[in-house]
Image (cartoon, rainbow, N blue to C red; front, top):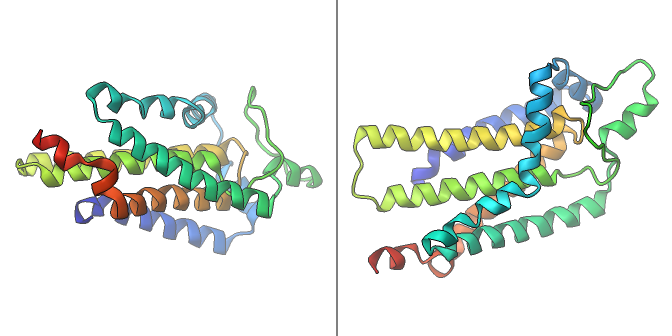
Amino acid sequence: MKTLSVYSITYLILLMIVFGLLYAYPKTELHLMLNSCHTCFQDVFFKYYTILAEWPLYILALIPLIFKKKELTIFYALCELSGGTVLQILKHTFSFDRPICVFENYQNAVLPLVQGVDMHHGNSFPSGHASTFFVFCTCCALFLAYRYKTSEQHSPRTWILFNVSLLALLILAALGAYSRVYLSQHWLSDVCVGSIIGFITPCLMFYFGKNKILKLQKDEKK
């Protein structure tokens, strides 16, 4: 969808930057570099922000039911189930160790940890939280783009507001993915692949099933 270009192009640029970092630095060195600046504010922010992917986003996905738009909630559920299936297959196929396990063998490297965060040890690749953040935000971006495309109001002000909203959604998703690296729950490669799953799944689902699953156009005419 052309109207989603700001979201998708910016994401691809961000992805290229991440690929460059993964290519240029060893995994452990890159992880320490990305965690080189911990602050009290960031510790608290990322500690609680990452929790959004565990249940609050699922609650937010039920909001369309209030407005009798059950197709939107069903669409999100199908995207999450499809992406989650792929993610779990990869997790149990590779079964990589989490950062805390790897850094136990590094005597000269101190892994910055956030107090109060329960650390996980196995099934690191890919990141389920990163996937959930991107599934949710990409679904929202798709709905927003569809509404904008079918709307009759395409003033410059509306166009700017629409694109700023898309960028805001991408930032929210990226922050959620980065929170997993900041909390040392995942490697950058984990959240990278998780984000790809979370981005591609809704796009494919929307492209192939928007008329049958969403039925937005029919609902608007009623």
